[in-house]
Image (tube, rainbow, N blue to C red; front, top):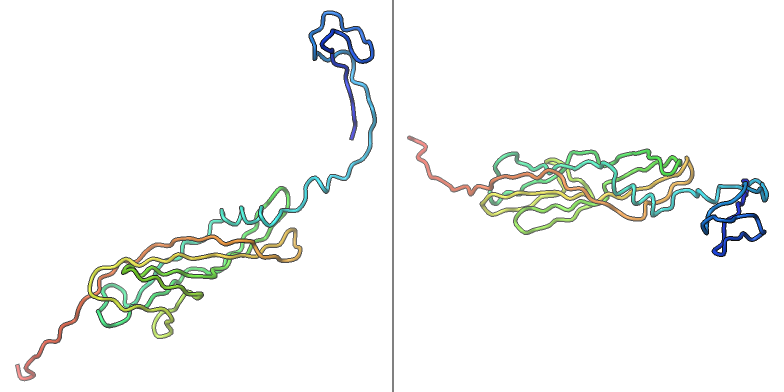
Length: 195
């Protein structure tokens, strides 16, 4: 670090040390730069590692996947039989970002799932579900056409320059493609086995 100074013309046309400044406007620099000192400064404190708040701001902008809503049976369903929901997208994502010259590794994990069934019911789960017969998420419908959708909540952990892992202090959400299907009412029909 080098510290320099230069004379400036005062409002009365003089300088603090009597340097000749006749005819110069106030505030005009006069004469050469004068060295005052030099030294070394540790700039580490001027660029501290990213704060949790900074990491969270980056976390909110990550290109996280929009997990799709899958339903079974595919296509039309039947009233009285449950519709199974699940998502088959990736539930863990790893990103490496540069924040002010620091390498920050972020691991995002889908930690909660909000299923809007389309008939006014909202299901909250902590797992992505699974297809039949291992299903964990299902819903019964009356006859009609419905559009179901999934909002995924992502939480995360991060480390700076390969250091200790910490939790990202907040979550973010993504909305995946919805699924529209029709629920039909099945009516029994008597038939003559001899026809």
